[in-house]
Image (tube, rainbow, N blue to C red):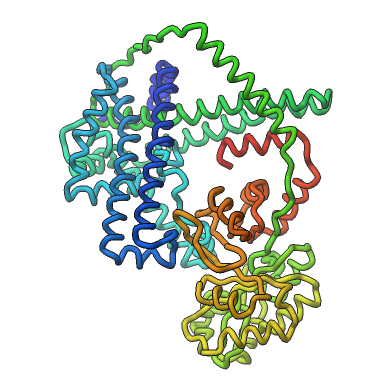
Length: 595
């Protein structure tokens, strides 16, 4: 087997992509449009059918196991997985085969490609479906490097899971080890689909063969993908500057013309990024195939067999020109009229962690000083039926003590020293925390957590504390426990209560609450629309970057629960004060690039 050559792979992939670029742009654009217009709606309808058939409004982290324990629910889930897998298989297989045939200079038709794909799909109906499913799960990391399906976009480990893992050394080691292993396996299985489609073998045989021919080539393959990612990032950055600079310059020299220039720039950027994101999967597919053919000693000399172009009628160019002019006009008007609504509240997650340990009085004071709208904090019931402000049910992570909160009294817990990121503090009682919040004039978002050993009067005791301080209507309250949320809503109507939903598939969860707190992994404009139709607020958590904060502020969500309240407030201040057309153009281009 020949050794994979890094620069030869990059150059050859670019050669084939460039020579057939117009064909690829049209073909892949149509392919992705079909996935968006056919596969997505079909899967959405089937998902709605399978949930409503069993009496579910949505699938969440709280009911997914119950759904799967139902034999009909499990059957529906398997069918849904098969359908999704089939669409992913079709999309990726077309990319692999079309680039393989070009490199091998084999004449082909779309019908021929589809027939080949369908012939191999018989393995989806055998026991090898399980192997096939595992394979596609493992190739998801490649999506970030270009070879992806529209159906796998947006699949990642939810941020709230990653954030919690990274808060401890053991969790961080576990997370990064998992990522490294998955990427390694992913690289070793890189050629499986190409082998499966271009030969006469099962998926299991293709996986075994890929594992053999990638041996001792891992670092070369990784280098190729890293270089492609770096070049793509650089090109996006350069394109961003090129499209933004004329509008910035026009604002300085002739402000009235800025909306026109911005409209033209936005239109050109839309065309550029659509073409770029359309052609990138082809380039990556060429690289994968060339590496595979190199290892199998099947590379043949390049032939400049550019696909013959069919001349277009004049009417085609007239329609295209009219469409571009119309898009420029629409973009110009949009950039002139769009404004920031300034409705998003900033909620500091467990306080300001640059000022002290999470959920401590120091982090509360720090958040109060910068002027956040709310401080989110967590409470747990103690052994003597009091409440402490603490997140974990066990003291191991912050105190280094392997004891549970439920087994300790309030007096014992208040003496515990907690440490985080160089800060030390003690665990405050809920009474003490509220007293300081009132003293420092900051409102609280109290998350009611459970450890499984709550007293019978758990909620009544909590409500007494709230009443004692007279903050029933000043603060907001939330919980992961649906029963707690709906009980508070029924028994204490003056308290504004929300339901936390880490994972939500389908429609927005139907719950009797004043607001929904959704993890950004599950957020969608559809859920935001549904929340407004129900007269409920929608909060998004946990925001960890200024870019994400800006994204959700521009989406006009009702609140963000964030780890970076200082930076989020700066982003909000910038949005309030900077209404320049160039800024709006920058936000629009960011949206195009998925930032």
